[in-house]
Length: 151
Image 1: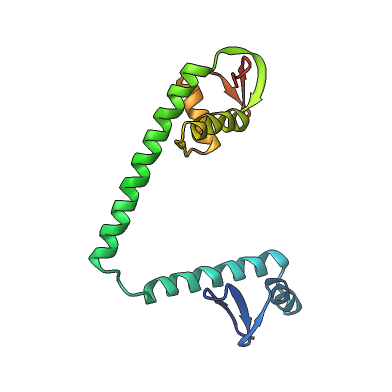
Image 2: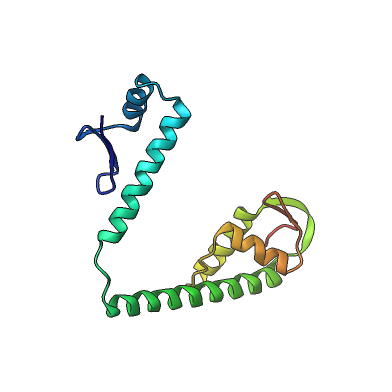
């Protein structure tokens, strides 16, 4: 019995036939392996195939590296700008209070405020939570205590 993983199809091959992970595990269990060891063996096959696929790819040209570097710089600047915009919005619109709101819903209000202005603020909930913490708000379990957000 020969087991392989094909990264291009994201499928397992059992004796050169495409099959599912569950069927390969059941075949290995029939050979006497435990479920845990069969799963680890499949994980190892997947890692080997991924590493082999990585080393088979040709080296990118310098222009590709330049383009990727430019995209990284643009994304980093956009994120930093969004963090500053969010911090300004928090200082201008929020006050500490007793109403518990999720960080996601407060971020949603911030996004809507910037959309009305014709701008955008691209942040994840975790980034917005860190903005709230830096502005002095206590964030616990994804919730923050504030007054009512102005519409």
